[in-house]
Length: 404
Image 1: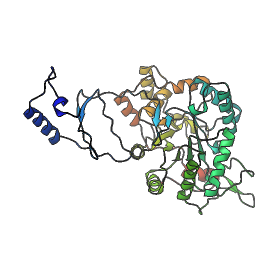
Image 2 (image 1 turned 90 degrees about the vertical axis):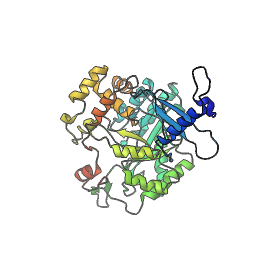
Image 3 (image 1 turned 135 degrees about the vertical axis):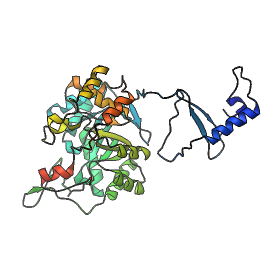
Image 4 (image 1 turned 180 degrees about the vertical axis):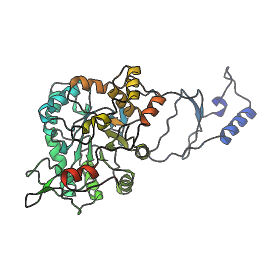
């Protein structure tokens, strides 16, 4: 490796003549394609499709030479975790807890852990963290796993954005979940609302009450996202959370946060499905070393009962998805979840049925071809179902766009 005479040899290990080695080195130099490493970027050199060699290492710059050795290779990644910038391991398939009813939430969480789930995506606003905590406790008490095996996520709600309220909200969530730390704490929306004391209303939801009793959203324009982020960083320093991140933001907001963050965001959680592939956002986050977790992985399905989508918009009934499901002997939902994990994101589908929980997690024993991945991505129509710029005005009489 560090001796050019041994880098390329004849079959009997005898060295090539000096002039041949010189010509070979010159050819490599003349035809090289340089890739500059910067923080947050990485290159994978796959030994099955490339030949590579390295210059001797001293101090500073080191060149790695690679050449295509055996053509292209289909993705065959059976990895089940993503590595965060902190070194934490984020499971790529987890249980989303949004809209899971309180009366079945504890059993759902327990059953999910029992069939193999280790990522639980919760939030103050979901209103079921106490029940989630009961399910976790039962699973731990029954020896299904250890606390350190779980990756527990929760989110800071809009009414707790002021720095003096961030820790309060986090501690309330931890108490409800029955844990002494969170693996990941996210800012739920880039929307600051008037503080609502926990003893008055919890979870505070989207609606505040004015003195006259009229329910409406009341925005808090006296706090900046930077102040909220810096309070989130303090949670890490105090050992309450292992990783921090944000939800429902785009590249401009990410760029701003990175300009002042002393603890970088580890995860971005956004709506992501074949109708909203968010290619540029995914690429930018990845280049900054931020892992992406997508919600609403099956598209409009979760929004039909909220009258925010129609059943005929379902991605699951598309002929091309059905064909792939038949070809791989999987369900349409598994095809969409495989697409999500195979493109390097984490997915958090929800279900209360044990058989569906087992089905959703069974996406690590097959691969979609490059052509199938491209076909699913081509369904993109930039269609967003979870948009405060739409539902806040319709439901809460407040126009509150965040994406435009």
